[in-house]
Length: 336
Image 1 (spheres, rainbow, N blue to C red):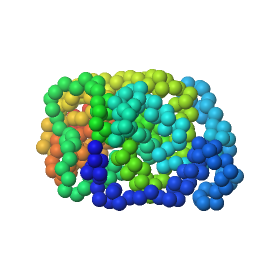
Image 2: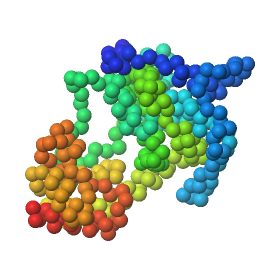
Image 3: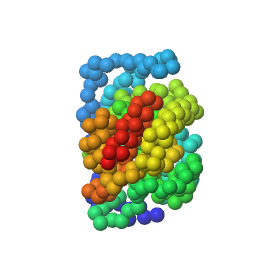
């Protein structure tokens, strides 16, 4: 496959950052072991003796503690490879293989073998890949939020699991499962395309936070892949409970005033109000009533066009707060 045809002109012009390669060689354990006699005066690596943090201990919600010793912290606090810390990359690759079993991972002589890059949240990866693959004037397909009136679609196979050609780029994030403040996401896709992402990162963020990567790796190391998947299931169950509370509150207060579908996952519900446009109603009237939602227009391609939709998040609200919020929204809708 000719991957160049998917790339923008600016992306094709990107070249390896020599200084980043030097730095990556310096922190690459395999490279150092293979070349023990090398003396480097090339990189701009700070002397670790200047780092005030020596060790750290993580206390998990279940009471367990995980130590980040001096060796871990030395690696976490120093510049690292653009793609991510090697042990974390290995774990993420194992996770993708277990969950998605990508056909290209073990395909010999494939032009686009699967690769993984750690990003500063999935939004960072999305932005850079779009800049690498979408030029002005290109036609692209994307979802346009709208009420469909259909039942939620069941848990379907991922595109990555069906990617025999090596043309799928997948974005994942730990923001909703481990920590949003860590800012750790990762991109999985064919190596020729991810190489462009790596070059972009070399000239922008350089690499995702080493401390965040190490903290995440230590937690995943302690849990194991199955432990992480169990944590994901528990998180999904919590949000399912929250979702059901939200749906019950909407049924009680918004019936006849709005329409909605049952979300199959996540922490949001998409609501179609029986009004022509929700923007002023939500940004002004709802605020005056002491409730906050997101008007649907901000999710549309043309945000200046009227939209009857709103997005409600049930992740951090109690059942009582949800009932109060939708009761107030119902009062506003009746007034309107």
